[in-house]
Image 1 (cartoon, rainbow, N blue to C red):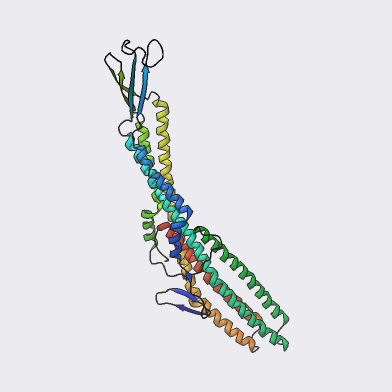
Image 2 (spheres, rainbow, N blue to C red; image 1 turned 90 degrees about the horizontal axis):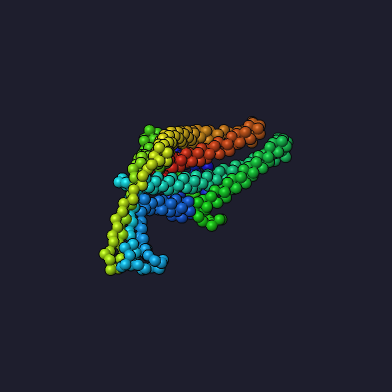
Length: 418
């Protein structure tokens, strides 16, 4: 194993690989593009938004007109009886068009338009959430490969220990207890390898599910992720999120919709009306024409309409509180993810620059002393366990870093890791 830190403070832990191994890798950006095209959740949210876009035109249009056909007869119910001889006998038609009080149609259209805008932000939220889950599954999958390398490399090192112990035990310079401890640790490493393999298969299954691929579809090894210190300040991220967060924008559209709905409810006290025009054929007698206006009288304003205004006022107040709650929650989640990313980066750098190199030097020193009889096996064993723990902690912090950055990307829309 060799450790290095680039001039741009980019952390990387490089392991020895088999010469001639295939370099096919899995790129997160390609997976995101495929998910945006194929994920069923994203496609369903897109169709809901597209359906919602059709609603404003419906709500801002006049009701369909009504055409009435009929006749009036005298003497018997047959059509045409009495036409031309009786002044109340006729055959005719009428046309009726309902009209809402001025301003109501416009408000109805605007209410539906705000609802469609909120649906669009919901669509964006679904897309970001899918990308978050995909990114986190990608990073967890990527994490299993170096973790497995650490386990396999230390498994081989323990087998070397075991051979040394057996050789020393044969000449009476080591105890049987040392061999038992080493064999036990070998078994523990085997159990960890089994758990890591299960985690790998689980993350592969989640990625295939998010991409709408068949179960068990092949996935190459993920590319080595980029790790760099965040250069954007927490304040800049918070300000950017307030302008671009689909969650906040959705709740803002809901508030605006509630305000328009309240104005519409207040207009319900004003009457709607209908205009009717008719023509009636009367045979040899002069034709008869009809024009009529029907007006809806809001006699029950103190009950129904007032209750409607109160309902919309309460909904608007609730929408504003939800917006405030979402704003506070967003601010907390951003700060929490930002601090997690910063902390994990610092811990990674500490493990890489100091802890792991020192642990390797300590192990090598104790191993040399043990081979010459200057140190006991317990010190060698303890130092080896420490290296395994530190290397696993390093990769755990790398995973935590990427999980935190992916959450920041979901909350803000910024491209921080890729």
